[in-house]
Image 1 (cartoon, rainbow, N blue to C red):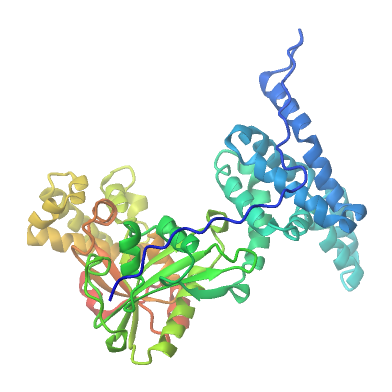
Image 2 (spheres, rainbow, N blue to C red):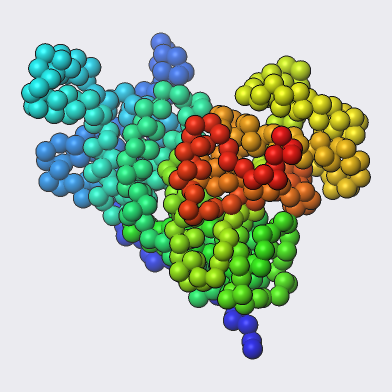
Length: 476
């Protein structure tokens, strides 16, 4: 049977021309004899350029603006998108500063409302007034922008730009908090649609799957086609306002047994097997597609929904698990060998575990000539003495079990364990790609999703304990 032709990307529909679509023109800073500081001059120039946009934002929040909201909001959305161009980066910086300063609650009104509520907490009007006064006006601005055509997508893009600036401009954290709060509500999984992605999906969507795969890169159309064969699955979450853009997607392999290496799962020449014979569903990749939704919980809900869907479709499936990298492992090993950082690296480990970690690290350093960077080479790993291999596995187990519950623990482990999975098995030599060697010393992990025990495992993790299989106890 002939294989289907490679799909041609669909042409994007032409965009509507929105009012005020051009970015505010950056006014040239004057250079009088008594010029202010360069910084002040740049701020003044930016403020002049932003004046029409800021006036539109205030109009949108006014009573008149509420009546004519869609038209005003659409114009603001167009201006914000134009500001995201690299040439207007400084203007966008200044716009965020205005959001943080000029669209915050009025301190005097907040104080008066708080005093009134403290003097009469039994009065419902006092509480309502306090709630009204403490809500930043920018939250209502974002709500009204969200009603414009394309407004939801524009706010997701705006938050992405804001997140890129937070490290340099910590005062913008108040704006980020408001956007995260609203996006968390608007992208509640109850509002999202889970859809299966297959070879018959639109080419535009398939291209996005290739582009956004963040764990195991997809090497073109042939590779993608193999990942969408009957013994593989791909599911994504979609929002009604972004119907053609996946928010997050997960890839699944249907197998006879729990996978212990990634290469066979993503081998585009591997034979296709009948899904009806599979006993195990392996989640081997989960990728976020929208950086502007970072921190909005989506992946945990998607995995659970997919597991339930697969159980209905293929009732013979007995096991739902992952094959996951440990991207923080090698970095933690390097930190633990640094005398200046060893204390923080081993913080949280019980005393006996700390002693075992120190001994294992010494064994590994001796075997690598005190060069842990050598673990990024497959030849070095293969040549490690048995004792050094055991030391590496012990360190990985200690890292996952004792560090995952703490801030700075492995991000993938924290995601799955907080999601209610159980740490099931360590797999050596499981990912020999350059990325797998560099980050995880080729180790991968199986996390088991026991649908009957997800909630209890999650509760254990929240209380600081990682639920793990007995087989891992020997390493601890």
